[in-house]
Length: 346
Image (cartoon, rainbow, N blue to C red):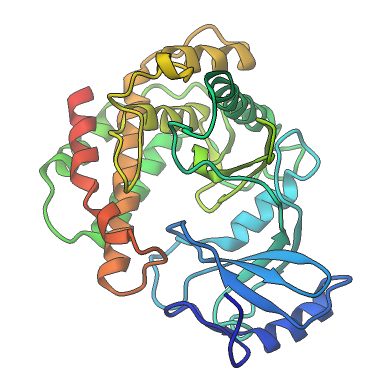
């Protein structure tokens, strides 16, 4: 979508591209306008735009305009963690500039490099053969392990979150977020908010950079190889516990396959070359040099609850007319089924 009257127009996410171009010319070495902006499809959190100049492409991610939940859409945290991980084995996009001045485009934003990769939106990977599917999932597994191997002190992220009591804090946070965006009583969510705080495993002292939204469509792969070029969408990242990311990934193996948010539940993954949950967890354990994960069900239950709470926020924004994606209401309808899947695990 090219701009009209110097504005990027997409629902309520428009901004003056002339003003933005002038600003970025003073902030990014080599940046020269004129500038065109196109909003990417997909994504539920922070609206993302392709910026095109005569000489280069960039990507801009902004906080949504208007009222949003407190502590949500923290694009400044995304910028910080990607910048910190630039010289590690974790594939991330190069960051250029963070703008906290809301007067430029109406909300905080940052600019990063444009990566010409491919995104796999369907976890069944219909465009690949069995060996390629297997390679994609094992590559995702490797990237997750590389992230969890990062020493937070060495990359300057020791204060990126509070160490210890991760699940206690997360359960508290997402309970509050869920309550703030609640649109009706959901029995399964009520039960989970009671069960989870009383069943937290003993703290084992593991503290890593947790991505918080680690899944297939948050990675950009090489156009022809099964190699991850960049792990994206760091909005929910924090200092956390490694098994939360792993269980969140495995949650998708259990979610039902549908057009709104496709999972792999009920699909014969073995015949397609996609690892089973047991194989996926075993591969991660091998990377991390650990023998087993005790109390695995808790981490899955927590992941279902947390994801349901996130989608409740998506639904609330959709009702308020501030959603970033046309499927927002459909995603909001997944809250109750996700809660029920978690209860079934209990």
